[in-house]
Image (tube, rainbow, N blue to C red; front, side):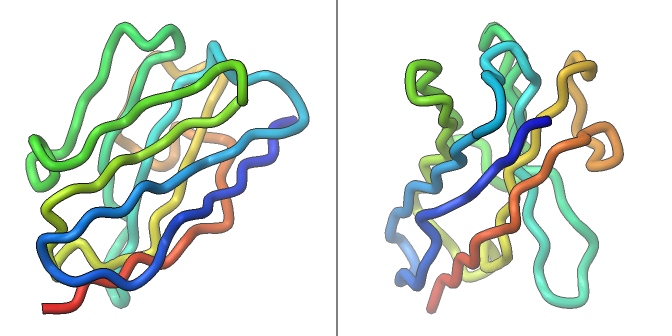
Length: 124
């Protein structure tokens, strides 16, 4: 079992930056496929980005490409989402997810482990 915990959300003005963290506990998840999703009020959970288990593949949703960057620190068992040039439409609860079996996927149903979410609010 892997437990995930996000942090780093908050309120920021449009054009600003935030860095989200997702710390894993329970076991090392360095080889797990990892991803970020987000969910705005009244909307379905939306794919943001994923990184393959060994970090050789990354993929970003078109809506965040060029602005958001995933990274990881295996020594700290933590992954990050650097968010720059934030827009009001980026406002959502952001979730990190991981799975030991999935190669790479942009579907929430392919991930077994989820954090509790962290709120990101971007004001105009």
